Each structure stands twice: as structure tokens, then as C-alpha cells.
Amino acid sequence: MSVTPGLTVVRVEQGLLRAQVFKSKLEEAGIPVLLQYESLGPVLGVTVDGLGEVRIAVPTPFADEARALIAERDALEFGDEDDEEASSADG
Image 1 (tube, rainbow, N blue to C red):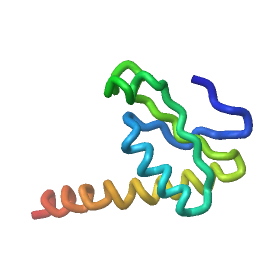
Image 2 (tube, rainbow, N blue to C red):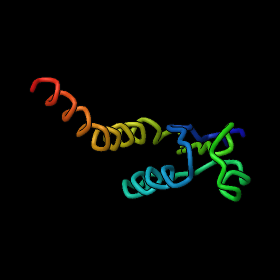
Image 3 (spheres, rainbow, N blue to C red):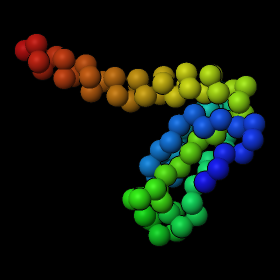
């Protein structure tokens, strides 16, 4: 699977559903997104051996902004778990 010239892969996800979440977040911020994946993965529902791999690509000038938005989304998603673990370790 090759990346189209002028695009930069900013994230690789396992499964189309998670990739769609990031695509929506980026498009909401005005960043065009291309999802690249093997068509066989979603058809068969296979997510092993690279078949479920989805590359999230954006135009290169938007790459830094896209990565920042993705990092922000990750912090929201995983930040609460880290806080809970730290709280239970203290108590």
C-alpha cells in the first residue's frame, strides 16, 4: 500500500471504525483526509496480518496540525485511564 504523493500518513489504525473517528475529527477541523486500506479487510472483517490496517493520510501542509489534533484526541481518550490508575496507586 503506497502513499499518494503530496500526502503524509499521520496515523495508522487497526480497523476502519477507529480510523473513521479520526477522519471525522480532522475533517471537522477543515483538514482533508484520505483513508488507505486493503479492500479485503473490511469485506471479510479481518484485522490481522495488516489486512485491518488503515492509514490516515492528509495533505503534507496539514500534517503537523493533524498530528496535534490526533494527540489531543488520544489524550482525551486515554487521559482518564491514566488519572484513575494514578489515583488508585495513591490510595
